[in-house]
Image 1 (cartoon, rainbow, N blue to C red):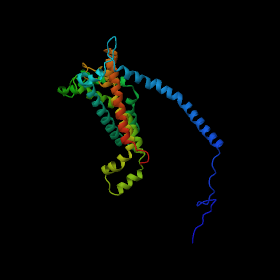
Image 2 (cartoon, helix red, strand yellow; image 1 turned 90 degrees about the vertical axis):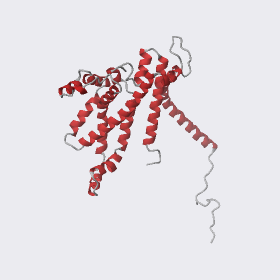
Image 3 (cartoon, one colour; image 1 turned 45 degrees about the vertical axis):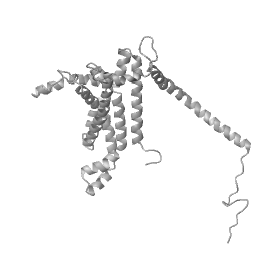
Length: 317
């Protein structure tokens, strides 16, 4: 039995589409262009603002980084960038920046997760939340003043050690490298842990209790429930906390500058502090611009690499 096809309606049974009239096609194309022009008009003020506020200063900084720091500035190729391989102060600054990044990620994330788990679902969780949030509410300069009282030679730490008969452990906490950098990382983590605790608590409260109860009924112990249920559920929060800590470690400035001003000598400088010192104190704007460009590249690469690995791509769960 053969199937006959309607010569007018075709195999689908529907009448063939009529060709669009040239005038209708022209009106539709004109309407599309008007929509695009209107969208561009709305975007134009934001694009101009971003160009003036963000791109123009960065482009001038990049341009300035290729010139010398003499009164009559001349093009000196990559000499300002080459100083990173020869200047021990800049090498130490880069080393300190890496230490800050590692410490700023490990301490607030680890302590925040630990405090959030220990205080979750307890009757004094609100008090604990308030206690760890107060340091985050004050500025970095105020935190530096508080820790200056704690870490000076006759400060709270040394006084407590001497009072406990452990005077031999008392020391110059802000004078010897790398101990001075490590104690400043601890001071910064004391401030940054509060927001990590809050975020982890929000994540913990989002885990369905039925899931944990079902796992417990199946014989899963506390460590197994934490490893296979709690940690995977906290992954989105962990991405935010680690990302914030990464950026905070790269841009560390105020606490260091108030506590030590980069000293003794230039031992505790990070890239952000070195950029300020070179530009405004040593009057070498070309070197300061090169440090600013390098720091910007490091921040962009680190943020892009981290977010690209952690965030799901479109089309994947």
